Image 1 (cartoon, rainbow, N blue to C red):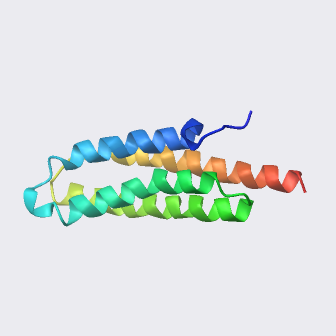
Image 2 (image 1 turned 90 degrees about the horizontal axis):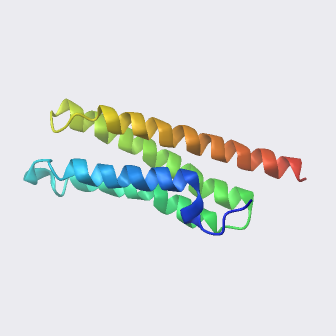
Length: 122
């Protein structure tokens, strides 16, 4: 059954929950990072579910794929910021990195399924 809203997508739900955890973790970052790492990580994290939402309404598979691919890129950007936060000893990012991996795997599967269904219907 096709979802009627991006909010019904399992991958969006996972990504949104992950963003909420990123925000919670970054609250403890040093104040001097507010406009640096805190801001960069939050913006990249928000980009993941935001691009899933935007891509949801696109009509063609290539248009959808473009936005979903942007989400993939934002996940990798976040991966680096989490490594940096860990190496700067701002936070233990182990759980968030594992959750990022889960979001990435679900998103990869979603994209593959989208293309498989598209090719089967041609």
